[in-house]
Image (cartoon, rainbow, N blue to C red; front, side, top):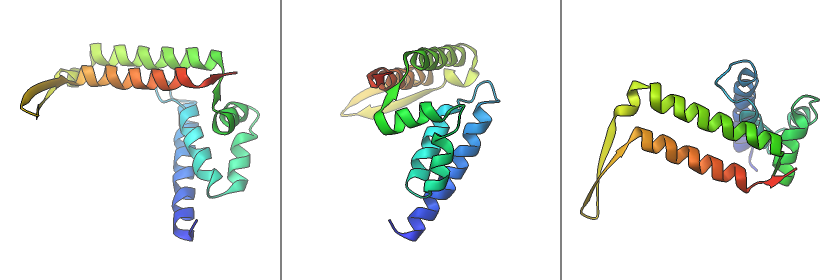
Amino acid sequence: MDLITKKLYFILGFTFFIIGLLGYYLPILPGTIFLIISAYFFMHSSQKFYNKIVNNPYYGKTIKLYIEDNIISVKSKVIILLSIWIATFITISVNILTNFSFNFNILGLDLTINVKTIAVLISAVGSIFVLRTKNN
């Protein structure tokens, strides 16, 4: 890996690390996913910072299991799925911006997609992703 890519990965790792730490203190921002992303970037740029993340006594084991073995505990899966769907339902029921629609013409078909539909589809994809990982 060249030096510029390594530096970019380090900057991204540090950025996602800060966002991940904020996620543990802010109620709507998930922390672990950003620490997983951070660990991925550090794994390719700084072994020292990668080790600091995966050896942390509070969240290191979870992150290491996911990155190295693609494992999420059943308890974590339940928390993740509940968080995804509660946030989705709150967003589509409360947010005024979800009333907007996008019109597409694909192969002669006029399609209208509502932002609420997009939110549900993204949540469904995330749920499938979580459910397909191995259990601990």
